[in-house]
Amino acid sequence: MSILQSYTFGTATRIEKCVRSGLSALWLVVGLAVLALGCEFESEKHAGSSGSDAGACVADCDSAPQDPTIEPGVHLFWATHEYTTACRYCGEYSVTTIHRQYPDGRREVALRNSKRSSQGSSWIKPYTIDGRLFTMGFGSSTHGVTERALDAPRDKILFQAVARPASCYAVVGDHYFFSNGSQNSTFGRIYPLGASDSQPELLDTGHCVHASMGRLFDVRSWQDTDDRYLYLFIYEKDPETGEDLRELEWLRWDSQVYEESWKVVFEQDHAFLVLEEQGENEGITILRIDFEGRELELVYKSARDPDWPFGPGFEVSEADASGGLIAVGDSTGPVVVLDLVSGDRTYLQLGFHGGLQLLNVE
Image 1 (tube, rainbow, N blue to C red):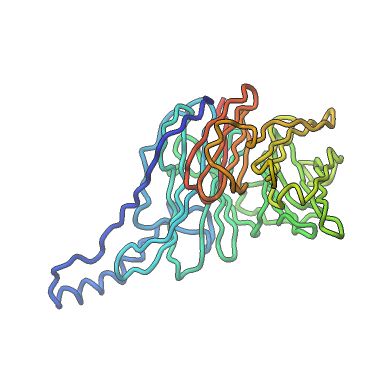
Image 2: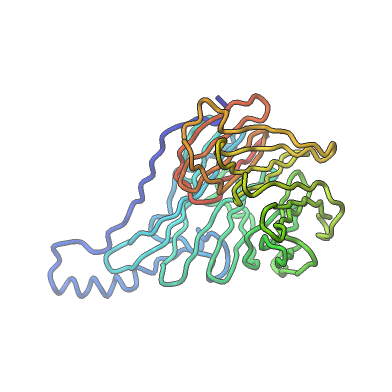
């Protein structure tokens, strides 16, 4: 088994009842008047990110006690999302919970973010890079970036910034890069990240940006005219300017063998390509890309795993790598964590809806 242990975990949302039964008609009228004010108990202290659409914490914003120490090893973060009603007359709220699993298997709610549904959709998910923890807040018109302290992510906010909506993002030092993951993607940056006067700046070329070990990468893909083959190109970019430095690798695979859903993650000097294979060998395939030797190596194939517990139909929706581990998840909950050195596998059922992230603390 890897250092990530598999435990059964259940979460329960505490809902504060705003109206109690047995009230007389007079008290009910008075109660409703108070309720009109009481249901607006949004707290910017726990906001997932800045800006009106960034999402503010309401009602049940508390979580497990924060750990004053940071345990060395690989920490796992993920997000779950649900809709709930805080009280009978308060309306519906969207609630995102960020969960954390420590290297020894302990789990806790790192933070919880809620917003009234009538104010527009809003949710957050974790993002980790080079030992740092961020939450990305996705609103109807803004994208919030918040760096949080590892020892108390709920209470210690290091900085917040508002960026353009993006599906791909990367942090290198005090540069924040964002793009929309397509050939004609909007690509830009915020620099320096965290400064009060920093504004998003548009740059030239970027499809889907990634970062690892202080390096900035761009993953570009497209299919040929008959939609048979998918081509993938990986570029390294200048982390100061966002300009292309060199092409690192290009790959091609047959869409009749592999599904269109795929992920690329970076760890040390390698990239890992996660594919969904169809047919006789249905399942996930993980390939290691060596930039220096420009070689491709098979790392894992679930069809050959005698202990694979999830059966067919596993759809790759999230992936991340850190500290010698790679995690691949299906948005319905199944997750496999692979130790890239020993080959040990850990199988988890997280019920996550996005933001599966690994963070190595040394």
